[in-house]
Length: 250
Length: 274
Image (cartoon, rainbow over all chains, first blue to last red; front, top):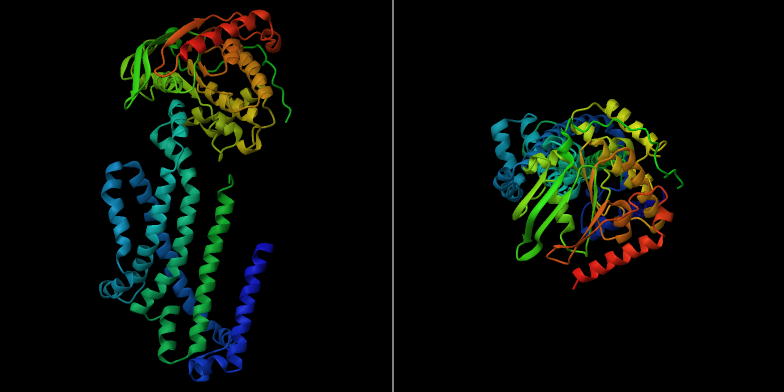
């Protein structure tokens, strides 16, 4: 518990300073803006409470996109990592392409995906899966390759098949790496979902943010941002908890 | 942590040896040469270990001892010369007849002690419960009872090495290759482990090739000791210890005769290092 004390104190201090700067009108003055464009934390909290059912409905849409997109990336990423690990040829053929794929500006591709797949959940899943795929695949592959060569030799003299080595030595070695990749992926998945919704959608927190931005409804815009952040932190924490339950030998 | 490390009970334990023929435990190494790039590590080495014989190999660091074990196990092929175990000369056949105990115990941290010991059975498709039952019998016999469920990180160095040895024994191979198995242990534990291994080999005789740079360990545990020279490794001298695996280790290694033999071995090592 102690290790959360200091960051919590910093957070409280920052929110407090923000509250003070906005409620006195100081921040709006400095930025040369009208007061309603610079909401205070208390105003944002009030909006969170008043619009909670609207926010919750849209958050649920976004959460579904994140979970499905992340799930697809997890399955594909783990399968790719194992495939590239087992076959030198596959690794040489695909690994540079996977790394190069990271230079594709997904935000720029998003509108094209909307044209192709329509306004439904399809393009959002594609974008989220695309950005989640890389950290999961690369981390898991690194994990599989970090296996102790002496342990593999030991297993071979104990009549282990390739499959037995993968299952009993390589996979457990790679597990903590896969968790690291998944934790990075789930954090960027939230960003991916917002991009996907901006490119074209009729619901979700990203869609709501677009509406509120156009209507200069800044308190609710900030409320959406708060909910998105909370969602990302929660998903990250769930993965960290799962890791502690599964990786018991560290 | 205090555990019973004395010699195990003398009843023979029926660990299947894969239906191997009686000669399957004979190791023959003929004119083996090996080099890594420009570095020659073995130069025309010939050795033989009879079935159920313990062959000790001592030599200075870097004389190719570990490479030799990997070659016997079929994990690596020599540049020249032949290695055969019984009638098996192909690497894959040798791999099927050898079990290898490295200096580091290499216990898998995600498995309990008993699951580590039963790895060879699991690799052959034996179910988890049956593998645990078979490994559990050995835990009782070799003074490890009560630690079946412990993770490797909860065991002492000597216990970890004993679990690793059981893992090798359960594999049921006719030939055991031990690569400085006790080098990472403190002197007292090492002595206890040597006595323990002597007892284990009395109930479960195997052909053993023991690589070590501890002369005393080689002379106590082996029926025959080959002294190798510095790189490139060749045979300098062969010694025949007389107190091989005597039940009272401490008494056996403090006799004047043992001291003379140790001096002879040290002399041979010194000659080979020149």
